[in-house]
Length: 235
Length: 228
Image 1 (tube, chains in turn blue, green):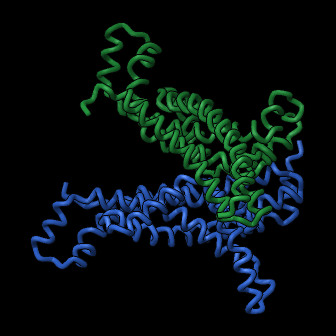
Image 2 (cartoon, chains in turn green, yellow):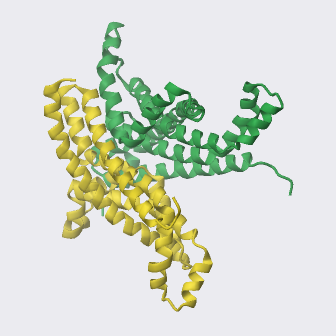
Image 3 (cartoon, chains in turn purple, red):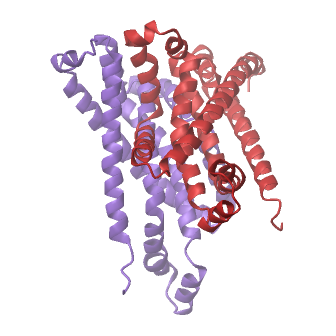
């Protein structure tokens, strides 16, 4: 049975797949970073019930978590294509709509999705902090900002790590969806290789193995962070 | 919003709604049973069985659904023994069948983790009591373990159902025209991107709302002994 392993090696696809994997990781990390910023801001709004803003945040999270990621990616890509082309044309960069632009929109799309899930994680973590801690800090006369920095933030961080691990795993898997609109990440590299060598089985198998390696390594990383943040209690 | 556009888009997307619903129900029906089998295997004392279940769940939860879908649809379709076998080809050769298989195998991995949590939460004394009453292992599972486990697992399983609904949208990448497939086509035909997105999004939210309500009702029924 001809699996095409030789063609993968011979055709220089190994470096294409590795480059794709690097873009996938960069996309995942950038989206996760923005997603955490969105998640902390929206999670705080939801937790503190800041009136008009909670409605906006509720709307955002329920739409993004209820509608397929693929549809959201289509929305952002298709609606931005013309807009960006116009701006680029106005400044005289006709050929700008290349990979850099696709990467930016991809980060926006994946960060919006990851941010909605992070919001729920942060809100849950904040809700898990005992109210007595904040009351005690107030009773000691600690000013509000320092209560956040010394009491709320450290506990929230520790409680939110397992949830953030889940969000990260979903985020790295969601980056594969961006391949359908043409960003040259891991899945797209496998797709192009599968098409031009006519050996789809081996290419998608390699892609699956690389994704699995990424998720398993990051799982180990999160386990390590979790152990690091565990409160040191006297035995 | 343009009225003409709504009249064009709503019937088309409603046609996709039917296919999305069929894909969802078929994947859940197969995936739940597979997931239950995997959860039981995972908790068995046989190292080979539990190891297989653990590996299965690691692989399927560690790779994107899109990769699994393409591996089955394009990858398996390339292999000659799959093409020559009529049963396998019936599954892999058709986009919708292949999507159901990929979704079912994928959700089985997540379902097995959810059900495993439910099964592990059951106090050992209950099982011992059932054995002391002379129940066979199958009867004990059917009357004691499973009903209690499903009660524990139902809220988490509701979330998984929503993920399956969202997963069906990937079938559009292998030529199945469900809601997202039709929506993409309409977006490139009419350029009314936000409007099409809004209609398709409402349809998805509707499906999810129905599913979540059903899960809530089932949960209320299963826990009707609890004081409100």
